[in-house]
Length: 132
Image 1 (cartoon, helix red, strand yellow):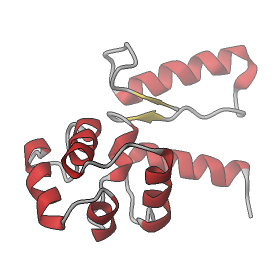
Image 2 (cartoon, rainbow, N blue to C red):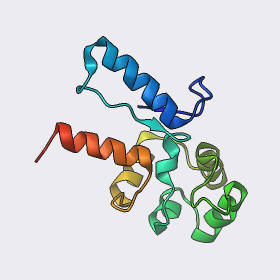
Image 3 (spheres, rainbow, N blue to C red):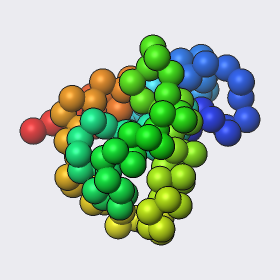
């Protein structure tokens, strides 16, 4: 699993996934690996319409909405620069980035409705590898 943004390749996430999976398959990992390319980066999973996001990031909902307007695109529901949006939200709220912050987001913001392709691929892979 890796971010497309900053990985050093300019190809699409799907082209990268296909290339890396092909390389793994050629070295005897076929059927025992699954490549997940985050588009553009992991922080995309933070952004949900859950009210918990603003609270955990230390902002009021309207403050977060105003900040996210700088990262919006009419045809896309999430920030186009998710990591920068996250960094600016944390800077605005004077909240340090930490593993516990991400743990709190993961525990309080439901991912059941997440349709992000990379997340769905990860979830599907984990269910196949660890059924039950």
